[in-house]
Length: 339
Image (cartoon, rainbow, N blue to C red):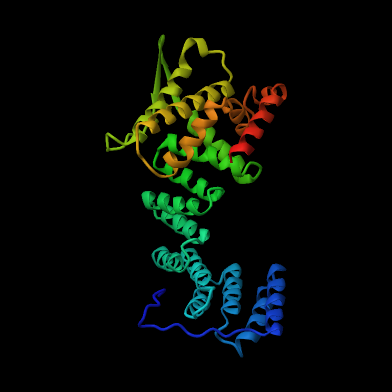
């Protein structure tokens, strides 16, 4: 499928004239207007004379993908990546996308990985591997793929979100909470960010209390990993204990926002303490914990909490933001200085 080794020589690229490049631009303009058939007619006029034009083949395959004709997308993209060009990795990526969308994830992974061999620093290929592996429930591999994307660009919000979703699916609430928090540094005011705020709140408030007579039972659902030395175990336990402390009588009158603040403060601080005793790697221990424990030490967890849960209708959030504008501004200045 995506194998193009020594036994299968790549075809020479057909270069385009200025007029043919103008035809490509006309096709792109038609595509942007939703006229996919019209766009393909421009590309076909080029391919009639220059059948080995990677850019015309890429744009034609992309038009098919946007139109929903995934099989045609796969076929045209495959023609394109069999040409020796600087666009091979992009054509392999599009080939994989259309395979994945058509329910062929294993073949998609072959194309993505072939594209990564062509261009290891292309973020979208590494990210697409993560998405496909996540959908296949291959959680550990998905996290590594998303981490590869972050090694290229640590500000890639979608990779942070992917990591959060995988850890949530694994019921590792500490790691998921940190990844969701980090996502919100880079994407604050979108439909996705609102959904992330809700998910983060759900994770942090996942304590169930039941009353039996004058006794209150607090039940915590934690995922303790099989390796006793895994620092994630200590971190998960810290998250659980931070929620248990909410049931103390002296905290009975706290608002939900105050509880969330103290909960985040606890897990950021304990996460940092756990990391100091561990040589664990990956996004949690190499990105999230160091930064968020630094944020906690600088005294900005409170502002972070109220900003992150703004808009969810939680008691006390809007009032705190109105009354503490200076703390918010100090946090923003600090964030700009360290990112």
